[in-house]
Each structure stands twice: as C-alpha cells, then as structure tokens.
Image (cartoon, rainbow, N blue to C red; front, side, top):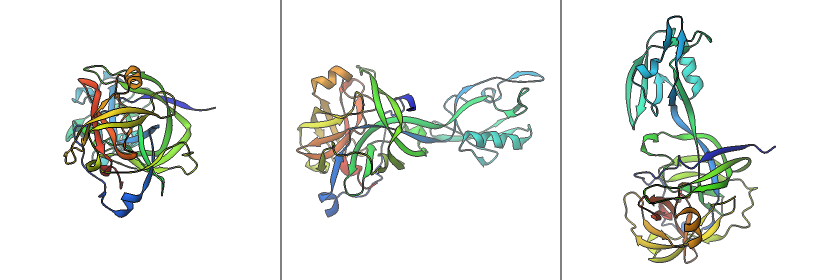
Length: 337
C-alpha cells in the first residue's frame, strides 16, 4: 500500500539573506548546456543540526513532578547541540548522554536565534522508566516541500528552491535523508495582503525522484533518478540575468496534483548585482494562478522563470503586502552546485 505523509510548506519560509555558493556561469559548457524545466513539487528531510525543542513535559519521581529544562530557562525552538561536551545530533544521542550523567547536573550547549550559549540542567530520574530525562519534547529532523527548478540534461543534476531551506536561525541544517520524494499538492492556503499563503502536499513515499547531497544558501541540490520520466519536461538552454529584459515571462509551478503548469508573469525589475540574489522583481499576471493561489505562495519557491525560451532564474520570495509580487534569483547563482 502506498505510504503517504502529510506536511505543509510552512517550513519553506523566505530567507532574509542568501549568499552565493555556486560556481561562475561564464563557461562555454554552461552556455551550451540544456536543462529540463522543473516545476514539480518535491519533499525532503533535513537534520536540525541537533535536537530541537518542540515542547515540554513533566517528569515524576519519588519527590513529585518536575520540569527541569523549562525551569532552567530553555524555550521552544532552542536546539540542544551538546551535553557535557558530547555532540548531540539525534534524539538517541541525547538519551545516551543523559544516562552517562548518573543524575548529576549537566551542561547543555544550546543554539537560540543563531547564537549559542551554555546552561546547566539537573536531569530527573523518571519513576516509571527509570531513565534520566530533561522534560523536553524534541525532534532531530525537519521535513518540507519545495519546487524543483531544473534538471541538467547531461548528468541529471538538479537544483531546487533558490534560497536557503529555513530561516537564518537554522543555518546548520544538513541532509538527514538523501531520498527526495514526489509530492502531490492537495490544497492551497491562498495568499492575502499581510499573510503569505502556502501549498499543502503529501509525500508520496513510494515515488523517489532524486537523491539530495547538498543544502546551501541558494537551495537544495542532488541528482535525479535515471528512471524518472522526463519526456514531458521541456528542455531549454539557460541565460544569465544580464540577458533578461523587463516584460513578459513565464513560470512553471504545481498547484494541484503532481503536474506542473505554465503561468504568465511580468518581470518588473532586473538587478544583476543584488547582494542577496534578489535579481528579479516579478508580478504574477496569470488570472488562473491569482484565482487559485492569490499569487506566489510558500512551496512555489524554485519555480523556474523562463523568458524567450531560456531558463533565467527561479521564484524565491513573495511580497507580504502584495502576494502577486515577489523576488526571483538569477539562474547563474544556482548553477554549479
């Protein structure tokens, strides 16, 4: 039976700043290379770079009930990176390190809002299990969905998203699971002025489409499965943002099911030197897309931008005060990863 896992695109928030981590565009090979246009929605899992606190719980011992982590000042969203100098990467690492402490106070290295600090906590021995606990509910992976931008024809190398996967406070994310799954979009929370919308999708866990190996400030990268059928995907050359012009262009996105559709946009501004790779300001002009989504929504990041038959970039951000407008990254900043 097909295994499906539900999730939303809420993790794929627009980042505040992105830094170039690719190679230059100006080679003869890049100029002649062809790329399959993406637009399909993909799901992936990343390591949280430690164990992230998502809630607190009480621990009962012979002296009553305790909430040691919360009483020590830890907060939801904090990431436990180390305990008494022992690196914590997975949930099991935290449990094993706590057993070594023998009930003595431990020093936690905690990351909060991009900064790290140490704090002391005294574990409590749980009356039922006999194990030492901190009273935290934690996770060590983050799952999300985004849009594939391109698949390079020569070697099936793909690029997606066009921006960092999460906000700046999750800068140490790593690949937790290499498999990238096809996602089926089952609904859309429409974007409105003052509130970003989002795609709602299902991981199709029996539909592995690629293997990821790199996550950086300009997206998620890896290699597509040779068995994936790309026959329906349009194949085009790429062109840097300096060749883009003000006016009509197109994006490819999936807002229902698994099949990308073409939608018309207008490029309102081209900035080839933007420090955060916000190289385009675009406006959605396609009435179908506006009717269905309100414009650009979370999960559409990575939607390829095509002008004059060439891949020139990808959608990355939405304007909160106007969901029909947003930013795009020049394709030269994505290639080479």
